[in-house]
Image 1 (cartoon, rainbow, N blue to C red):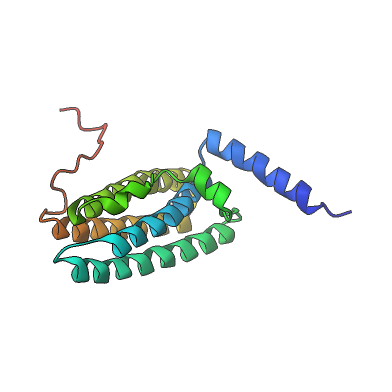
Image 2 (cartoon, rainbow, N blue to C red; image 1 turned 180 degrees about the horizontal axis):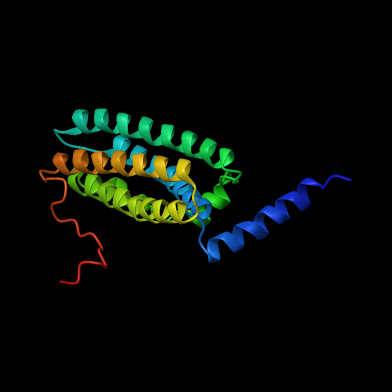
Length: 183
């Protein structure tokens, strides 16, 4: 006798709860999937509401960032399926698991504030990417680890681009938590 959709979903939710309390690579990557969804909205918010002389250049750059974010969303979802994981697929899950904040007031920020906010979003994303890399390595999941390493590089490039828009070098004003650097 096969299980009902309700039973299958209940089992999925139970496993997800376990995975998020004792983090696994799959659970960490699911946070990233959810972050992609919120980041998509925030990137659009900047592209739609940015004002000032730099608007055309910012909007063009953001179209590229949006396309790349959506590509990552699709590829990571497929990768999770390949890894026998269940990627988040509802707005409730995205809301619960995303660690990127959003706020309607941001549309009234200056262009520099909007872009700087998105730099912080990519930094937040990198915290989860770095954790996913470590977990995937510990769990011997090379495909997840390799994709996360590629994503880290793409995020770093996005940070550099956004930082340049506001007149900064890639790392200007950004603090990285490095617990190993106690010297």
